[in-house]
Length: 471
Image (cartoon, rainbow, N blue to C red):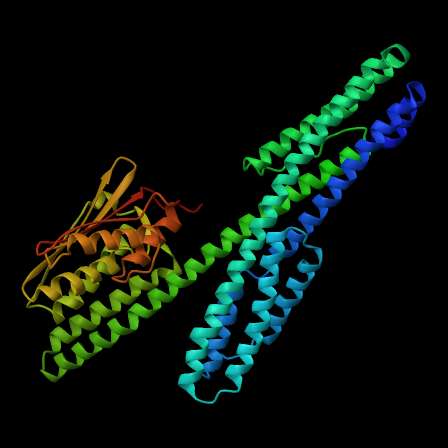
């Protein structure tokens, strides 16, 4: 194991060889380093503590209060413990926060949490359902949103101060290197060999750490082994920096995974909301066919319905071959054609060489449903839905087009803008667009073209992949 020596011990030997002035310069430099390190440690503690704040605070409080107001079976009572935990966290940060903007932000968080607790008890004391619901929307939702906003403001202010401190430390380190170099040149006659060795043992690690600090400020969070040096303080600082980078990278990844998990959950809920309404309408049609003694048509519709839900399950897979998605859409259209046979025609032009191409389940069906209900059905006349798929290079192009009512240019621009910013826009399009972006990346999604009175075409371009065969 390589032996390390404290910076103070090595400097003491140099002081004996050169002069008392060297001691004063180095002690002053060490004091600046300790002061900066203390400031840095405080800021890092604040950022780390604030990062522990529940990022789903607003969603948790809003949901629990909503269940409480509507007296749902899922209600867990008033979320007072969560609010008080947030207050304790804010008080801890308030005691260690010095920067003015950060202090104002965390003070606002504390005040809002106290106000939120009062509003929660106010709802508890309110008996009228409408009044409670009004207080939930006008008080609770607003306050939780403000708490979340001010906490993010606090993190931003502390991060800015941390970056500023980092720059100052870099400047101080550079100054210290210059001072040590000057003193070494002056003392070269007395301790040439020792001074060269000391300057190398200090300058090289500091330069390396400066480069690491610059790389981190540019967004490079790759963790590297701590620097190997004979100076214990620099080694400790290097280890602490690498640990901080690892924690920061882990927190960023965790935050990204939570956001992606939340979107997956929202999309799953949206899918669960689609099927019941479709099932109700289909069962009504089957009853109508049986009552009209159209037994064969009723049997075909039940068979199509069974096929539709079998494809929907897809053995629990979220990504399925295009051939299964085609069968799912075909079953859906056959069911709908039985209900809307006077207005609905369809065609499927899918390149069979793409049968094994993989895509997220329920990609085409919501687009077909959108074309039927918001294109053909509103036309109040015979309409055509065309489903097509073909390959372009390394991509598969999927398209659902109809000759329904279409959209105005203004509505089309509004729809494109909302989807680009991942807003919930209805028509079933937002769910598919978000799923494609989540699965393949932000450069993918839906492209919509439409002309009023002529129809709408929705196109998706996805990477061509096939399911890997299991050994």
